[in-house]
Length: 128
Image (cartoon, rainbow, N blue to C red):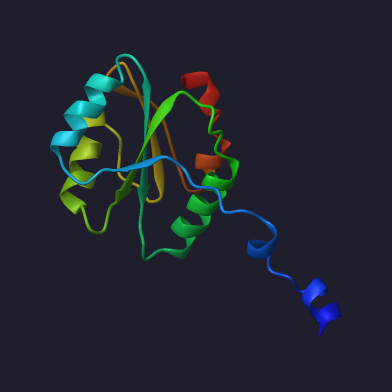
């Protein structure tokens, strides 16, 4: 049994789970606060569909490569449970809805956004 455990050991046993400092985005009023905070600090909004396998995969990749030293606030938006917030996010920051999607908010506007695999290609360090 020991040989099989070594060969087929799951990565969850060999790596620690990385936790990001997510803030739940659950109300439309938070968008005004994000806009204000973006005047001094970059704000990131990750829009995620909890029923989509691709969205889950992209989020897991994002978590694994995210640099915890970035000086940015990180928001998580469950767009299925907070559809109104998701819709208002698109209106407020003038970004067409996609899922998964990452918005980079700086000085009150979306200075960058990406969806699907493009999320993990964004060079977030350029925006902080």
